[in-house]
Length: 505
Image 1 (tube, rainbow, N blue to C red):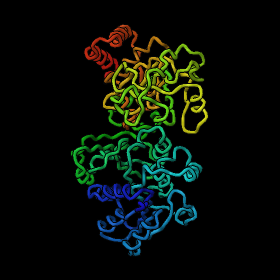
Image 2: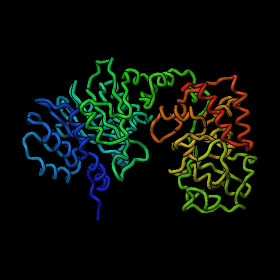
Image 3: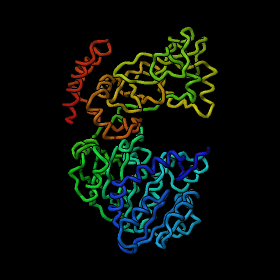
C-alpha cells in the first residue's frame, strides 16, 4: 500500500504531527497567544487536517474573523473543504513557499493580522525544489520550517502576530542564523516555550526538542525582552502558562532581544544566566582563534571501504573484519601518503568514534591504497576534505553530543567526519586544551553555545578560552600522567577543580 503524503510527509510522519497538534494544552496555549480580535484576517499556511482552524472556531465566541487555510496536498484540501463550510473559512490548494501565481501570495498588499501553524519539518526536498527555494530564500533551505518562519514574516501586517510550534534547532544552529537574524530584526519576540519532544509517547527527536514561538511583526522596538520558558514535567503546564502563571515552569527568564541580536550568529545561548551569556559574548579569545577546527574524512560508502578490528566493537554490525596482514601500521613513514599506500598495504588506522576521554585505541581501519584514493577524490559522495590536516597530531571531539564532552588525542590517525579535529596553532597548549575539552566547565559552555545534539566545528570554535599560564605546568603534568596510563579519575577531578576556578561557572 502506498503511503499517502500530507504536508510533504508520509502518513506516519503526518500522524506524528497530528498527535501533538491535537494536544489540548498546546492548542489552548497557541490560540490564546494568537489573541484573535474582531476583524482579524488569519492565515494557516500548512493547514493539514485543520486542527488549529477547528480550535479557533470553537474557542472564540464570535465569528468576526476570517481564516485562510492553505495546504499543498490535494487530499488534505479536499478534507478541509468537507470539514469547514462556513463563510469565514477559505480553503486553498497552494505551496506557501513557492506558489506566487496564487493571488494570496502574489498580491503584496494582501497581509494577515495573525498566522498560526505547525509547519512541516524534517522533510526531504528533491534537488529541483531545493534549487527553487535557494533562489528565492537563499541560505540553508533543506529544513522547511525555517522557510515558513521567514515567509510568514513577510505575510504579516505590521503589528500582526505569529504563533508556531517548531523544533528548537533554529535557536542555535549555525545553518539557521539567517532565520534568527530576520526574526530578530523584523519582529518583537514575545515568548518562546521550550519543551521535550518526549512529552509525546512514541516520539522523541534525536536532534532537538520542540518550542512554541510567539512574535509580533515590528522593526521599531529596540527595547523588547523575550520570555524564555522551559517546561519539563508535564504538557498540562501549558494551561497555566497560557494564563500567565509561570510558577509551574522549570525555568523562566527574560532576555533583552537586542542582546541576542548582538551575539555570535544571533544565538540565544539557552540554559545560561546573564553573566554567563555576557562572558561567552565578550570573551576575547575563542578556540577558533588559537586552533584550527575542521571536519574529517568521509569515504562515501563506509561498509565498502571501512573495516573493524573485531565484531565485539560497538557499531560494528554489518562491517567486515579487517585482515591483519593488510594493515599498514607504518603508514606515517610513506611518502605522499595523501596519494595512497604504495607498498602493497591496504588499510590504515582510522578514528571513527570517541566515547572516552584523552585516549582511544584503534578499532577501525580505512582502505587507503592508491586506486581507492583516486576513487575518493573523483566520486560524488566521498569527501576528501581538510586533507592538509590528515595524519597530524591534534585533538578529536565527537560531533554527536553525549552527556559529557569527550576529547582524545588523534595520534596522527585519519579521522572520520563524525569527529571534529582540533589543531592548536601553538603546540605547547595542546595538552592544556585537551584537558579543558574534557572538563565539566567545557561541557557546560558548549551546551549553552549549542543546546542541540550537534558539536560541529562551528560551535567548538566559539568556546571561550582562558589560558592561565600559571596552571599550564600543572595541567600538562596531569595530562601526561593520564596518557601514561595512570588512574584517570583523581586527575580528572583536579582538572575540573582548576577549570571551574578559572572559568568561575
